[in-house]
Image (cartoon, rainbow, N blue to C red):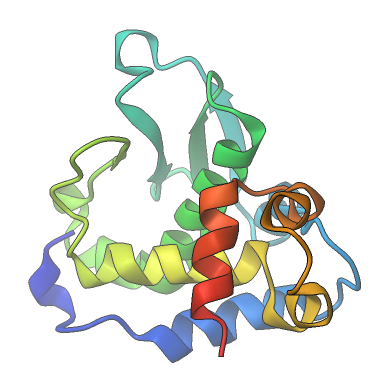
Amino acid sequence: MNAHVIDKPRWKLAEDKANALTRHYSSPPIPVLEIAEQNGVNVVFADFGENSEAVSGFCDFRNARIYVNSADLPERQSFTMAHELGHWLLHRTIYEQSPESYPVLPRFSNPNRHDPLEKEANKFAACLLVPERLLAPVKNAPVSALAGVFGVSRTMMEYRLKNVT
């Protein structure tokens, strides 16, 4: 997507949307696959072949599918599903206006890392996978233990702990 579609990330929108989807869950990990399906999106675990090391996943808006790299670790797959679901829920109407400009989620040197839409999708994913209301009571536990309980990478948990309000 072109960064000019929105000027800056809508943090509250991303967080509120994720919170609305997780409010019925009382313990981690959050079932991202189930949430995607409840929102009309089919998740496909795919072998990206020679692109496997470069691509984590992408959202196929036309066919309501999220493709996830089957070679990735489960924690990375969960993040990819959550990130792409964020695009589906937050950016679908934007995509419909400009379908040719939507990128896949590259793993390295992402030229879109400063794109407000990518930042929104990342915020949505973080809030979906690690809801603040579930993290708050246990936030002083070791990072690696929390990552295991929430089914996310240590890096994701460190990010979330630094960015909860």
